[in-house]
Image 1 (cartoon, rainbow, N blue to C red):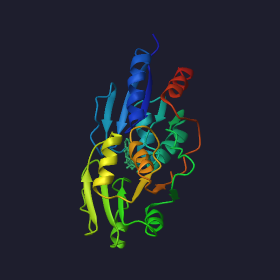
Image 2 (tube, helix red, strand yellow):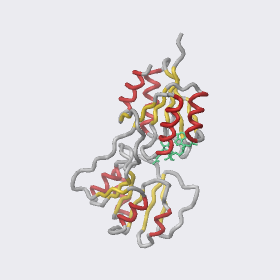
Image 3 (spheres, protein in one colour):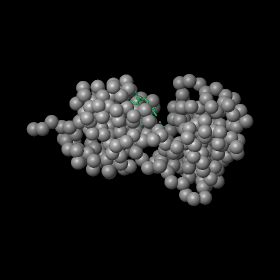
Amino acid sequence: MAENKRLLILGGTGEAADLAERVAAQFTGRLEVTYSLAGRVQPERGIPANVRVGGFGGAQGLADFLSEQGIDLLIDATHPFAATISANAYDACLSTGTPRLSLVRPPWTLPPGVKFLEAEDMADGVWLLSAFAKRVLVTTGQRDLDILADYPDIHFTVRVIEEPSDPLNGENITLITARPPYSLDDELALMERLNIDCLLAKQSGGDISVSKITAAIRRRIPIVLLSRPLPEPGEAVDSVGAALLWLESHL
Ligand code: NAP
């Protein structure tokens, strides 16, 4: 009997977890699945796969992992802002000849008339909002927050999933921790309670964190969205269903 093929899913998103579940339901007996997490935050649900946690050691480390583990196929289902691991996956798959698919959720499309600006990065985003905002809700994650201290006249409420290992400096910054999904009512109440007049967020797309965007639109609060990094070249889909079809065509 032919051996099962081996799939590596680079995960850390709801879509990656959904994919692992649907692969388990559809391909048991045909695919052996390893699901990889960076280990920054605890996964909120069990994953029906061999779960490994932690970095590979760059593109070469990932290439070695693919060879040593006899991985036949790789699906990069990481977050659209996780640019380093995606670049490493591109390089590692190229050097080992491993077929690779990117599963990337579509970006949000904001309706016409919504007050929103796009920014290249945090420095650009904070500079843009400094022209009009005084009380900002920041949901961009743990990175590049130092810039906030350079704007002492603006108060920033920074929401992260888990407390950063390095404390945030700046009297104008309040840190709150919470885990998505957030309901629309909760987002509306948070913005009202904190008197938020601007939302600074990533162009993450997807359903899990869209309620803050909806709440800002409803409260007519301007939104500054950090643009996504450029994706790696190669095959890409934007739904779990399409990723399953890709897998089917490679077995
Ligand atoms: P990143 O900047 O692209 O990656 C930094 C390093 O973390 C990589 O070089 C790699 O280390 C390791 N890494 C990242 N994802 C990994 C994975 N799935 N499995 C094993 N190692 C991984 O990534 P990030 O932005 O810090 O995101 C880390 C994880 O959180 C990703 O899995 C991503 O899907 C998830 N996530 C990110 C965001 C976001 O906004 N960035 C939001 C939600 C979830 P080595 O070089 O040592 O291999």
